[in-house]
Structures are given as structure tokens and as C-alpha cells.
Length: 105
Image (tube, rainbow, N blue to C red; front, side):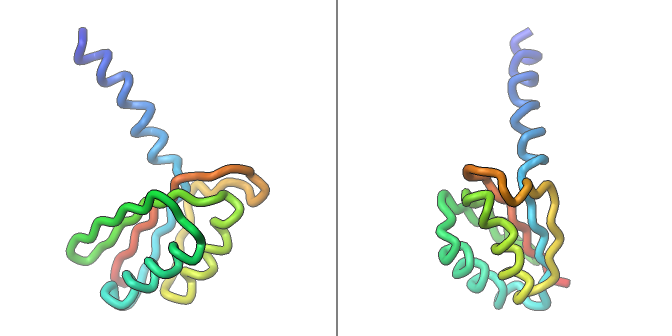
């Protein structure tokens, strides 16, 4: 019974993660893109930034204002090809946690 209760409490959080705004950025050179993305996130005053790098991929989560998401996406287009998922309306107030994944082309 305890196992069932734990699974039920974890499931909504996993589902929420899938609905967070996400950006997939495909770049020619991951080693060049990583420091550029770090600089862009700093310029957009992102908070609570976490980064994980694996062979051929880099992942960030960062908290930033909803109204900055589209501008962030435009900045990232200078680095590579951007795919957006689950973006809120531009006039949505508040902050959100963005998931950003970078891969080589």
C-alpha cells in the first residue's frame, strides 16, 4: 500500500516536468555552444541554473520569466536550430522552469 501511495505522489511531478517549456537546440559543435548558452542564460537573468553534460548532449534547467522565453529562443537561434515545446502565451505572468537540451546536428 505504501508503494502505491508513493507512486501516486511522484507521478504528477513527472507529468509536470514533461509539460515545462522545453527548447531543443541542435548545433554543429557542442563544445562551442555550451559557453555561449551559459552567457545567454546569464544575460537573461536566469536563476537556479543546473547543467548536466553527457557525450554529445548538454542539458540545463533554469528559472526565468515567461515573457523572456521567446526572446531567449531567438538568441539561441544564432547558435543553432531551435525547436520549442510547451511554450506559454507571451503575456503569461510569472516565472517558469525551462528545460534546455543541446545536441550535435
